[in-house]
Length: 240
Image 1 (cartoon, helix red, strand yellow):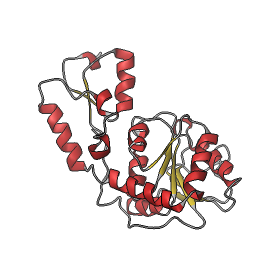
Image 2: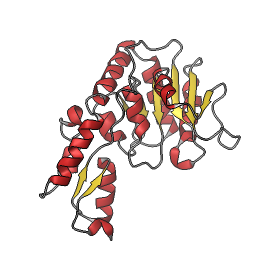
Image 3: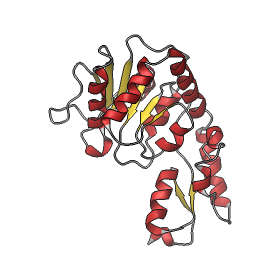
């Protein structure tokens, strides 16, 4: 088994590292979280929209959980009747995987447009059933958009540190409740979540990730213990 070889083994999230070690035992994993292009994914300070807008990645795959996100939007509209929905993705919508009524969908947006789509939203939904990281979480946060996410991939690490709401399970009801709180709760709370999301995302760049990767590759000793790293206050500073 390749993961048992005496070499450097690196995971991109604490959750992935825990999953691997649950199956294989201690295989001396280091963790180097993903980063995003902070020159591209950025947005100026803004206020919460009236009416609010929620976004998510659309995909015709159960793994990506866009059906959970769509259902959460429908449930949230029972309490926020004018909630707008925006989605984008590489798959075109179909009847088997419907979008919420009246949703705006952008098919294969150009890379330069994607940060504008994140910034057009007041909350971003992450509902993946399986994911090693979940890069849209970090992209949305970098654009000052609070994230409502299920405990998959990097969501527990990122959202526990601020900038969104981590729901306890992959439940559209739980996601809808958190979405309502973000989009219709005190505007001061939204301002705080938006600022925390941006601050956290912009404290960890591609250069930081590269430096951490090189440090682990050059270290002949044991890698940083990811289970400790994921629960320490320093996570909010540098994801470590």
